[in-house]
Image (cartoon, rainbow, N blue to C red; front, top):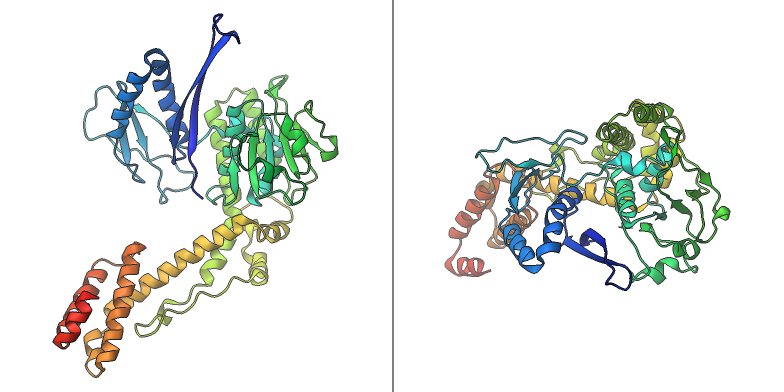
Length: 459
């Protein structure tokens, strides 16, 4: 699925000349990239100037942004805009999960000195979760399982950040369900999502309109967030409530669900975070603790799956140049379950509970389907790469000596197809393999009769 992300800077100013008593206007930045922190920082720079100088200012900014380099994963970029230089590092698939962003020293001395953004896409998780800290385990499981979830928040900002924080809570596992950080009654899927005739879809919706409480009463999990209230020096924690307690419009903050967690709460983590609030630990440090915990929890869950998936890969010695690569063995849920006793999540996670029940439910979720498809695709491509390397190392010229023209032409066509596929999929193969096969194809074509050469060269 490909969506556009909208980043908004909203301004409201008192104005007696306007009927409402105030003037309001928004500047919206639209992008396919989920670089939340970068684009909000950008809007903080652009919007105040735009509201003063209008279109000419926007035109100048667009010209500057037009000159920015493409966001290549792993690179550090300097992005000039309105007299400021933002220095950012584009995240890469190769980054160590939970690691600090790698900084590359700027080669040139920049004036003005660049503003360093520690991240371009991460949220302040602690700020997002501070009123639901004691229910973190439940929220992680609901997100992991791709359950239909409605978040009712007091503002579009809290709604959006809560949805995005939930999705990031299962990182590095990709959230493969649908999600809408800020959903309104004007969205085209409104009727589809509020129908009572079918089960709610696997989606996380963020909303602000209290009207949704009434229309979404058949949803299994509804989180009603309010403004943060303090109980002494700690943020007041919302309670888990029965769905039957849902009232229209004046529903109190709480998590309305009948869900029972498979795993027990991590009381040590909760105590540590709450103590951090009392000791006035900075939000960034609290977020780092939270992020580390969620990362370790997700990795403990996913490592046994990764280990089992790797065991389905055919042995490298079974790949030969003259046969199609062997198939990856099918994923057997029962066989996987039998591995958990010796190599399960209990090896890396202190959390107790029904891990097996959690896996069984996970197997029925879109997140498992998305993870499995991606891993299967990567393994298939790895097999293709190994096959190409084995072919390259084989004595292809020797093989063709006692073969008929039909067999040689068939080999050429198959090799060409493999090369096209390898380049299209950008397969990771040893250096020189593709060039060597290209050279071999050309030399074999050169040894064939002229009429066949003409046909193959125009094919």
